[in-house]
Image: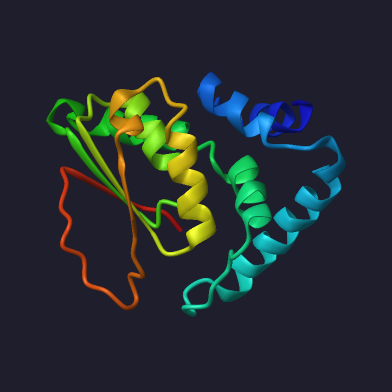
Amino acid sequence: MILIKEKLVKNKMELPIELKSELESRININELKELSENTKNLSEKYRKDSGNSKRLLTTDKEASAYSLFRMPVSKALEYTFNLKNADEIHTLLDIGAGTGAASWAASKLLNLNNIICLERETAMLNLGKDLAKYSNEECLKKSEWLKRDLVEEKLKEEADLVIVSY
């Protein structure tokens, strides 16, 4: 879809083809205006209400909008892994995983054998878990997705690499 391509070219980041294809298949051309509006509203919510324990994303349509505009994170991780010995990283804990963007990027850059994704919002968790099935990376396909509210719960999970977005 042109919309995704323009956003990625602008950010100079590429999504894995299997993820891009799956995201594009979820878009109805008639919903592009609504997706754009949801993206604008989400950006505003994140600017105003992040860190206040408010639920910022609660619907499947908001999750889809988020996935289209926030998933390309691989360049940032690629730079980070160039600074550290990536051979020592085999497990990943993705806190606030959302759609799994960081997990997708890490699974392409590292030799991971275990990924755990923690997410508070049900719509995001469901979308991320579903998208992971389309990965060519076995560790992402078998990733464990857990509903966690980090404000309310203490974490028990551990990993070689912990990613916390936003």
